[in-house]
Length: 194
Ligand SMILES: NC(=O)c1ccc[n+]([C@@H]2O[C@H](COP(=O)([O-])OP(=O)(O)OC[C@H]3O[C@@H](n4cnc5c(N)ncnc54)[C@H](OP(=O)(O)O)[C@@H]3O)[C@@H](O)[C@H]2O)c1
Image (cartoon, rainbow, N blue to C red; front, top):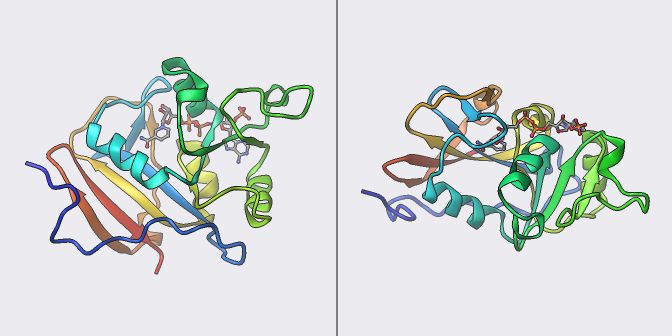
């Protein structure tokens, strides 16, 4: 039995465009299971269609930021230009070969490469990226970005899965929790600092 969205729950805020003056200019989006697993062998450990739909709904029209490991996992499954239609894709990488000789991202479909969290923050605050700037993982990127995230769009995957990548603890900084959708396989929550 599922509800989409749950009619009894008040509407939740869509991610707001990044506010350059805010100490928390980013949003975050993650799916984790009951034991905090988020990845296995470079991939998502599950395929939950409601979560894929939720991810598309929250991120479309906005900027998504992911680590090189996550991006390369996606490249193994799909063509870079088809990975995230309607979204501005930013990859975090410190590797010199993430940029071509012309200084542009080495991967087609990637709008920008940021070499550090400071670089991402500076360019976000300068208004370089359209819409909300949404941190999309993986674990190393979440750990570095969490102090700058104001709202987390969390999918709780109900089952447990074998995995090698876990979500760092973050919940105590996001005490304001609204349930947005409930499904047999997962529950979506919007968690904010205030
Ligand atoms: N369940 C979910 O919602 C979800 C979401 C996303 C990913 N995942 C899963 O998570 C796993 C990958 O996570 P991961 O933690 O291993 O890797 P990751 O965070 O995706 O990527 C790590 C890489 O990103 C770059 N990076 C990270 N922080 C950086 C910083 N502050 N400055 C510059 N570059 C930075 C570095 O790239 P360089 O080595 O190039 O410098 C680093 O090696 C995969 O299994 C993926 O499927 C799950």
